[in-house]
Image (tube, rainbow, N blue to C red; front, top):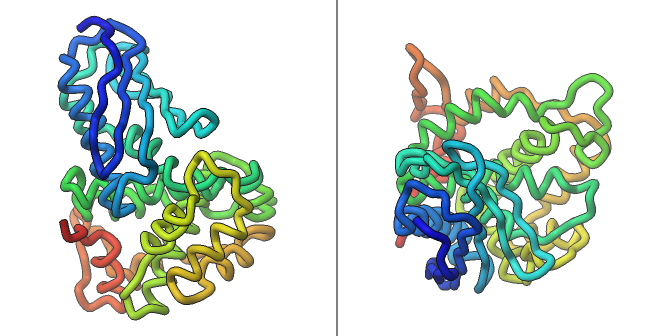
Length: 285
C-alpha cells in the first residue's frame, strides 16, 4: 500500500482525518481505516459522542508487527501519532488497545504536569470499558486484567501521594485506581444511577478537551456537580499529597469479582454486584 492523501473517517459525530506517513504496510488501507473507526466508536460510546468534533490520526510505520508509540497532542487541534508495524495483521489490530487509549485523552483537559496521573490513569481505566461497550472485550477480561494489574498503582515505601510520586505504576495504575474508586463511589452515593462516565462527559461537554488547559480543581468540581456530590474532590484530598492504601482483595470481594480454576467468576450476591455490572454495562444505542 502506498502513502495516500489523508482520508476522513466519520465516527461519533466527528470528522477524523487519517494520514499515512509511510508506504510500508502489508495491510490494505481499508483495514487500517476500520481500526481507526473501531477505536473512535468505542470512545464515542463511553463519552456519548466523540470527545472533539475534529481530530487527526497520523499512522507511522515502525517495527515489524503490532501497534506502538502512541502519543496524543492538543497543541494544534486534537491529534495523535501512532506507529504500526509493516507486517501487522488484522488480528493484531483487533487486539490493539493503544489507539483507543490515545483517543480517550482527547476527552479530558490538559492539566499541570504534577497531575499527569489523572490524564494517564483516566485513559488506562476508560479504554477497556469503552471496548467492552462495543463488543471488543468482555467484562470478564477487563475485571481479570484489573485484578492482575491494579496493585501496581498502590503506594510503596516513600510514597508522597499521586501529585508527588511520579513513578510509572503510580501514574498509570495509581490514576486508574483513583478512577475505579471514583466510579464505585459515585455509584454508591447515587444508588447506581450515575457513574464516572457522567462526570467525564460533563467535563468534556464543558470544553474540557486535550486542547484546553484547566486547573485540575475545575475538572473535579465540574464532574462532581454533574454527579451530585463531592466524590472526586474528596478522593483527591485523600490521595493527592499522601499515600492512601486500598485493600484491593476486599474491594474485589465487595464487587463480587474473583478467580476459580483460572477463570474470572462473578458473585451475584456480592454487596456491590450491581455496581460491578453497571460499570461494564453496554450503553443503549
